[in-house]
Each structure stands twice: as C-alpha cells, then as structure tokens.
Image 1: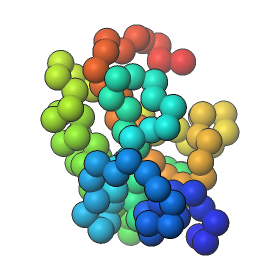
Image 2: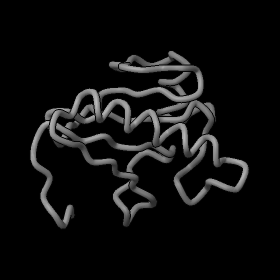
Image 3: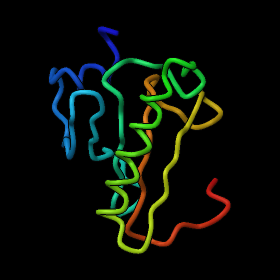
Image 4: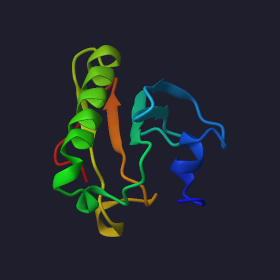
Length: 112
C-alpha cells in the first residue's frame, strides 16, 4: 500500500527508531509509549489487521509472535505484554497489522 504509514516506514521512506529488521518483520519504538519499553512489531507485507490473516499467513503470524517474544524477553526484565489491537473499537489506529510489546513496569488487569 503506497500511502500506508507502516509500509512507508518499512520501505525506509519515513524515519523511525528501528530496533529490528530481518526483511520480513521489523520493530520500531512507539511514538507514544505506554510503558518504559513500547515497541511495535510489524510485517513488511501489508495486512490490515489480525482479522485479515488467512491460512496462508501462518508462518507470518508465528514470526511476528516469535520476534515480539524475543524482544520482550530481552528488554522486559520481569515480563512483558503482547497486544494486538484489531479494528477501531479494539483500539487500532494504524490500518496495518502490528503487535505491541510493552515492558518495564507492572501491567494492570484488566488492560482497558
């Protein structure tokens, strides 16, 4: 998608604080962090949200979670939270699938 914010960041057209990129998935620091560690793990391929994933996307979904878990484990001493917001009522503000990695503070429950 030519005008998608995360697609443009993934292509290097817009600056972002990248902390990981393997060509399939990249991770950036969130511009509005909700925890001391707040990363977004994003696939280079455009998928609107988790609901847009199909049977052929199993490897992509697994890679997103694996990268998020690796970053959370490395940066979140004591634990971390993975969040996927889907759709406007789910809190999604950018129409490109991404996982939030939150760490560095105790997480409350329920989350929102």
